[in-house]
Image 1 (tube, rainbow over the protein chains, first blue to last red):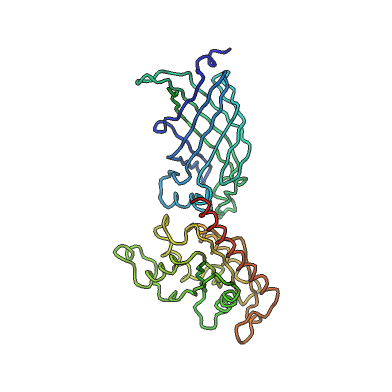
Image 2: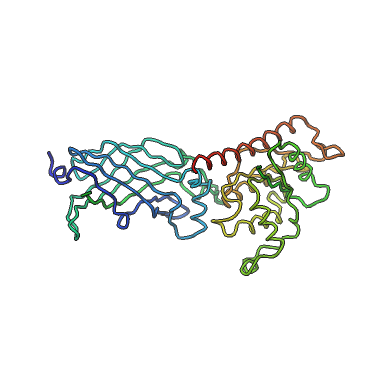
Length: 179
Length: 189
């Protein structure tokens, strides 16, 4: 049994939403565009050094720096919040043998569910100022947005397109062990 | 009762797109109430300044017509490879504020007629892009009526049986999209 495994006690770990971030980044024009979701839920269930991770994000809570862009992202051109209000990720059997997380799971975007490989890290637990055990979980994954029906684009004068298809999904979560 | 707002992007009295629109109106079945939008010519150029303390009367009427509809059927001509300015202008008024505009999430379908060979395909593509940007649920159906002066008889009836059939399919696609949206809303309730 590794040191990390023994450091993450079995049980349910609940999200601290205030100190967690989940979102995406994608190449747009000459740089990288980032967005996050304000309303995110996640849970980590640890047993015998392995874990089940499940997380959801409320599409309508997408947070970007322009209200019209936020409205467009919620429309059928993109996530279609009316018809598909939630994004979901689940990985049923995550090895916590080391600080490095490398897991297979499923992600659902715009009603389309596909396998996904996620990588990241999990920190050793700490005891926070209120006496709770707390871990940090950082995950990332790559998806092709067009495989989920997010096909919007804008042609540039050069003939290239403004928005890349490759999207990185990022989650930096703090989880607190349930009493 | 499903309410469809039918919009001709052409203002001309003998417009081919208005004729195409009227042909489509006749294809909607029972249970669908179709209103042909009036007053498009009265809508002033979009100016946010004019929208601060109450929009002009013509714009209020326009917004009310859009708000009361479940879906939109638009027939557009093509001016200089794109959308007629007054149609785009009306949609610009409708689109503000974007997050709550009355097109949002509602099904919309686009057809077009032109005197040339291509049936306003570029204007149609532009219009679908604009509707998507506004947040409409753009229905994946299309009809391009080229050589429009040869397609309608003196009563404005579409004479080509294949085109009539395709127009019926576009109408059905719009009605199905409305039914699907209503069904999903009921299921979610």
